[in-house]
Amino acid sequence: MPLTSWSQDREILRLAVPAFFALVSEPLMLLADSAIVGHLGTPQLAALGVAGTILQTLVGICVFLAYGTTSAVARRIGAGDHRGALAQGIDGLWLALLLGVALAIVGLLLAPMAIAGFNPSPDVADHAVTYLRISCLGIPSMLLLLAATGVLRGLQDTKTPMIVAIAANLANIALNLLLVYGLGLDIAGSALGTVLAQTAAGVALVWVVVRGARRDGAKLRPDRPGILASAQAGIPLVVRTLTLRVAIIITTFVATDLGTTSVAAHQVAFTLWTFLALALDAIAIAGQALTGRALGAGDVTGTKAITRRMMWWGLVSGVVGGLALWGLHGVYIPWFTADPEVRHTLAGILLVAALWQPVNGVVFVLDGVLIGAGDGPYLAVAGVIALILYVPLALSVLWFDGGVVALWWAFGGFMLLRLLTLLTRERRDAWLVTGATR
Image (cartoon, rainbow, N blue to C red; front, top):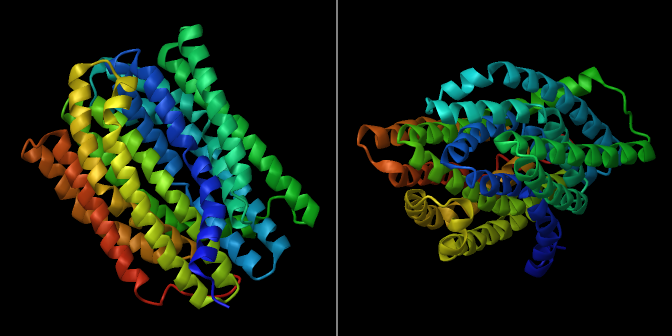
């Protein structure tokens, strides 16, 4: 019996509402960091923008640990294989730990070189290296947090990550205030506080997954074939994620070249954009879990119906988010900086960002649906196409001296390119593959 629109909405909201609070954990931490660091000075805020972009790239390329695991676990749940679902989740945790240690070492060694690649002023560079090196110590925990969250989403549980995310954010704010202002550690205190909060969150969610695996008799020891299979399945999603991160890096590079005021305003605007993007992605997380479960159970008709409903939710959410972003900008801009030049530039950026939010809403939903279907290879190819077309668009801002507001118009064009490629795929049936595995 097909689901009614109300039944579909209940399913979406049951997963999306808790997922929203878990998803916004990272940008909320960055917002808190931006607000606290912003009042230390403009160089510190600009440094946070550069270092934060690099850190998010290192962690962001491993987002397949959450997304791919959600899809794989949800498919097995749909097919009735609960023990197999948890065993696959444990493999993801081991892969996350190995990757986390490797990336932390790379980040610590190459931090000065990575910061220098953005060509910031000397005072910005010093602060950025400090923030990045301390933050790299938390990468293993951050990746374990991603993998454990993916397992729980695949099990149709988004409430547990929500509870942990709320606790982590409260801890992050308290630790940042204590270490930055109470102990006078400047930007280093902000990095350390966030690392401690994220580590505690990662440990908590890993414990929940391990407890569930023990209860169902799933293996806990490292399984080399399982770990390698998880890594191989994640390669297309890594490519897809890299295209997004490269686009963001190019955008930050251009903003940095436009001057300290531009990159400081860009940092705050992009943190707010990320917050709204991940808020929209809450519907995409529901899409991953519900699509994987439905296809695992062989329900193609139900998959199509829930996809159309989620696209509607994405569009409406994007409109609401855009109205809030612009309508409240006079209230929240003073939270982040006292510099009048940065405030003026930021206001211009936020108007452009608000106009693109409806496009973002549909993009994130369709991205989640196709990830849930295990359609990573197409997403990888589509991402490469969008990136190739975006690079000259972004660089033209420098060539024609367009300013940071023009840069944000260009970035909106990148999201429009992604929308076109995703809609093209959704309207065909090649991605609707059923069964416990794709």
